[in-house]
Amino acid sequence: MWAIRRPEPQRKSRSRMAGSVGGYSNQAIEALTEVLARFARPKHPEKSLAELRRLLESVQHSSPRTPRTPRARAVNAEQKLGTEQVAALLARYSEGVSCQVVGQEFGISGAAVMRLVRKYERPLHLKGMSVEVLTQAAELYESGLSLQRVADRVGIPKWTLQREFKKAGVVTRAPKSSPGPTELLSKHCARRR
Image 1 (tube, rainbow, N blue to C red):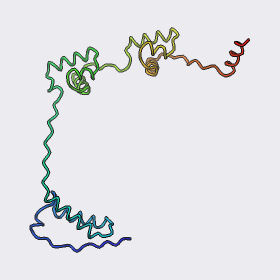
Image 2 (image 1 turned 45 degrees about the horizontal axis):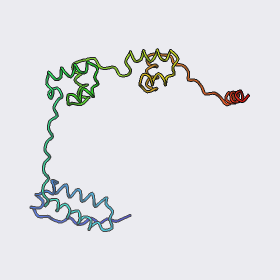
Image 3 (image 1 turned 90 degrees about the vertical axis):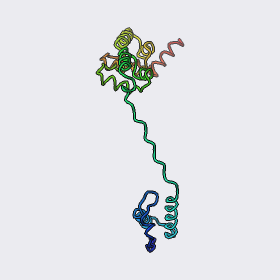
Image 4 (image 1 turned 90 degrees about the horizontal axis):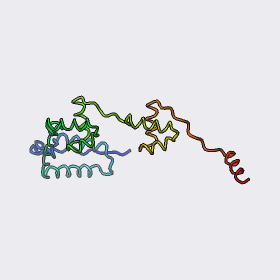
């Protein structure tokens, strides 16, 4: 185990004790150096402490920090737009335009549009497929098309269509299994005859 010798406390002049280094009081600096002396395990703790003191003194003589400028206060979307534009925004959302697009048109975020829609208790857009598209997809599927072909015709991913069918209670067919090796062999042999 390393034996660490604590340096003898040195008396300081009153002018040194009354001041502070870098915004820290001398008492805080003394506590910090004591902690460092206990837990730092250099070969020469006296040199490390002397270096720390020198560094702290250089901080005292450096220029003071410039205070941060306060941030501009965030403006509420409703305050930014005004009542006429909020009414126009809500009308545009009611037409079926997404929050993202409405927000871009009015210069605010999509989340701000959603907050205004909720504040004024407007009906929210339903996520997922519209009833017309779902009905069309179900009719195509019942006519015998596969899920993939229906999804391609409707213009949505297959997994989205499958999820929406499940939500709506549309029963899907089991996927056609690929022929086994015996069926392939019998088909191949039938062709050769």
